[in-house]
Length: 469
Image (tube, rainbow, N blue to C red; front, side, top):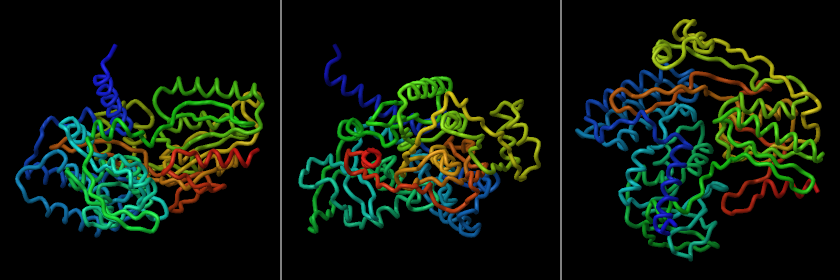
């Protein structure tokens, strides 16, 4: 039998590992060096700046070239001391790449630094926050101060208004708009980001509004491990699941990545079972979904499609000298996808055509009413899939607007900065949703139902089920 204390430690280690692996926060490419010289930082800043301009499909889609350069020069001018930690280096480079305002072009949350901080006895801000109606509201309270109720509004921390606190965090987050930045703060969590930007603190003076009354509280920091990681449930939690609720089948396909054969087997068996039950409605849940690959999502859609389909109306890619060098070093150059990139001229944008995907035979596919659940945490390919289903009228979209755009700069490739080894994700492609719209908005549901993160209730699913009775 495992002792209780050791069991708790095991759970913490597993939780951190899941957090890290889910968002690729630790990578094999991370450098073994714990500090970098001013020269190394400056060289990587220059490399990052030039590579983004060359490799990104359209680096100036959401920012002018002048503003992008001015931001880079400002960050570079801030490099004054002689030695930088990995965390400090990551923070600097993020401020350059996030200026492109593209969610898929990013340097991720500093997972290696966070892990080291956690296991060295680090502490965090004790309130988790969700953003509703332009307010920062307490989602979870691990401070031990029971007078701070869930749903209370956080007005300030250490005398700094929450608007200014968020303004300090935003430069570390790659996103097209403020709505998506807040989505990512909820995703990775406010306490983690607050530590990244403002560092370790022993206590926090917070100003809280509750029931129209404003009070100040002095809160002690909590342990990263026992006080936070062991207690938190990650926002991204999609998992393969089929169950029957009233007259409806509820299907969560899980994320669109991993073992594709296992995914297909689950989808096959799920729809075989659904067909045998002859239910009136099918609810497909794409909420809290990380997205992934179209080969997964198209296979799911083939079971509800009544005609051939694609997952986009156009998909174009940009090649470059930088990308070609990366391909020759890291990819199978016999594959058609990479051959196309190598064949075109440096800087050229070219079409990459997809064949129409065929529906399943009529005897296998579902022909009843289909409802697809989305929320602001439906990311990347899950948002694209919801838009695809909406545009082909394969189902009714229910929930709230996604953070990700369904027409987006994506098709990521990753490279490492030469001196620090920090991984960089860059969008080399642009895809347009099936209906051809390039409006800068998420997937807009046909039936709007607010997803409140402040409670454990499932408002979207419950409200839909009630309407289907």
